[in-house]
Length: 484
Image 1 (tube, rainbow, N blue to C red):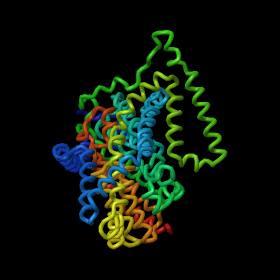
Image 2: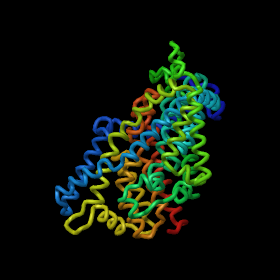
Image 3: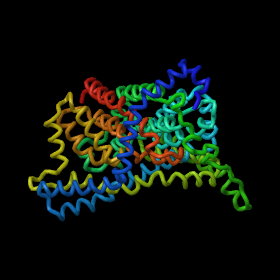
C-alpha cells in the first residue's frame, strides 16, 4: 500500500525510511503476536483464574492446619462483603461509558480527530487522549479512545494504522489509570465505609493526599505518559506496513450513538431536557453543600461522590432520558466481569485473613513475613511491584486484587516501616502493567473498534517492554524520597 505524501512530509522520512522503520519493528510485533496466538489457544477466561485462586487459597489454608468447616465459613462469610465496592466499581465502568457516548462528547471527538496531520501523529495523539482521560475515569478513556480511533480512521488522508491506533486507545487502562482518580485501591483506602475490616485493622484510612496526589505519583504519571506517546509514535507502522480500518474489514462509517425522535405524545417526558436539568440542579446543590461542609479534597475522595458526579454529568450531556437510558443499556455489559468476580475476591480475602492455621496465624501473616524476609526498605517497592505485576496477569482486577493483596502487602510495609501510601501506589503502578497483554479489560474497547485482541497485543506488548523497567526503577527511586 503506498505511503500518503502528507505522512512522509510531516515525519520527515522518505518512503524507504518508513518501510525500514516498519521492518525493524516487525520483530517485536511478531514476537508479541506469537505470544497472543499462544494465549488465545491456551489462556482460559479470566473467571477461571478466580475459581483457581479460590481453590489454591483453600488448599493453602488446609496446608497450615485450618479446619475445613472454618475455611468454608470464611468463604461464605466473605462472599458478600464487597457488595458496596462491587456496585461502586460497576458504576465507574457504566458512568464512564455513558459520558463518553453522549452527543457533546461525540462532537468533541470530531474536533479531536482534526488535530493530527499524519498516521504516526494520529497514533500518538490517541495515546495522549486515552491516558489523559484515564486520570479521570478508566472507562471513559477506553470509550473516548475507541471512538476517537474510529473518527480518525474516517480521515483517509492520514493513512493511519488502525491496529496501532486501537492499541494506543488502550494505554490509559494499560499504563496510567491506577494513578488517577478512578484508582480502585486508592479510592478504597480513602473510603472508610468501603474498607474491609481485614484491611482497616492494618492500615486504617489512607487519604488520597498520601497516594495519587503525592508529587512522586504525579511525576510517575507524566513520565509514563511522555514515554508511551514516544514509543507509539515510533512504533506506528508506516508505508506499506500500514493496515487501515478498511484493510482490517472494519466499517467506521456508523456510530454507536443514534439520534431518536418522539413518536407519540407520551414520549415527551423521555425526550424533554427539562427533567434531566431539574435532577442535575439537585445534584449541584448536593455538591455545593459537600464542598462547604467537607472541602474539595474530602468530597472528591468519596467514591460515591465520584460516581454520582459522572452519572449526573452523563444525564446532563445526553439532555434527555431516552438517550441516557440507551447509553446505560450499552454500558452495562462493560461491568459484567466486575459483578461476577468481585464477590469471589471478597471470599478470597476473608480466607486469607480470617482463617487461621494450627499455629493461630493466617495466610496473610505468613505472606507478609515472607516479604519481610526477602525484602528490605530499599528493595520492598521492586519486590512488591514485580509480585503485583505477575499476579495481575492471573487476576486482572485492580480493585478485587487489592482486596486480596492489601492485608499482607500493607502488613509488610508496616513491619518494614515503609510509606503506607506509597505501598498503595507501588501496587497501582505495577498492577496496570499486565493489562497491556491481558485481553480481559480490552473487551470494551475491542467491541468499539471491532478488532480482536491479537490485532493490538503486538503493539501493547512493545509498550510493556519499555514500561516495565521504567516503572520499577521509578517506584524504587521515589521510595527513597518518602518517609513513613
